[in-house]
Amino acid sequence: MLDYQHQLSTLADNGGMQQRVVAVVAAMAEELRALADATAAEGAVREEHVLGRSLRHGTLAGTPVVLARSGVGKVAAAATAAILCQRADAVVMVGTAGGLAPEVRPGDVVVADALLQHDVDPRPLFPRWQVDGVVRLRPDPELTGALGAAASDAVAGHRDALAALGLPTPRWHTGLIVSGDQFIADSAASDALRRDLPDALAVEMEGAAVAQVCTGARVPFAVARTISDRADDDAHVDFARFLATVAAPYARDLVVRALTILG
Ligand code: ADE
Image 1 (cartoon, rainbow, N blue to C red):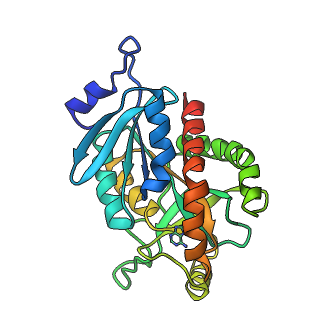
Image 2 (cartoon, protein in one colour):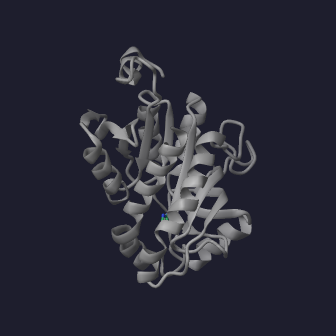
């Protein structure tokens, strides 16, 4: 909580008891749509425009939230995270990712227990992937635990919708998510990531940037991603279809359930 205006905004209407504000960020409008609808259905929404972004202030599961579309890539994500760190007490990133580990398949959910930027290479100055003295950024355990419990419920809840798309029974995983400014859509690129980072579960384009900014600002954060593709030669085809049909309701269910668990 960094400024006076924000302190006022976090004093919710429940007898002056302070409730934390949770920022929810996704890269693409499609990933955020069902969350925005759920916020509008729950009560008044206030729009704020800052540095070219539209933020939506409202509530979800009774928790004050700020919803933001970051745009694609690490720069857009970092700028958005900096804005959100001045308005929220915690940041949750949702959206899609490509599966890297063999057991991580489309329809699964991956909750990050660590994140790194796979395209950062400051050698020989510092070790590969190191930023601000760390290679693996660690999300907040409480938020991550709530997202894990929510993921367990969400995969069960989406089983039928995924079966209709011809996808197997979804599962959830927790582990390393890697981020970079490339959409990985060929097998050579995903093989290289698997070779260099054998324990990476999934690849996306924003999470580690949000993690870096939140870590620097000392704002708790967590990241959960729905797997849309296998980061291989079919990735671009699968991605558009998956965004339209599955990503948005999955993101909503994950966040609403996690906020309910957090209370
Ligand atoms: N987001 C969803 N799928 C992805 C992929 N294959 N590469 C990078 N970001 C992604």
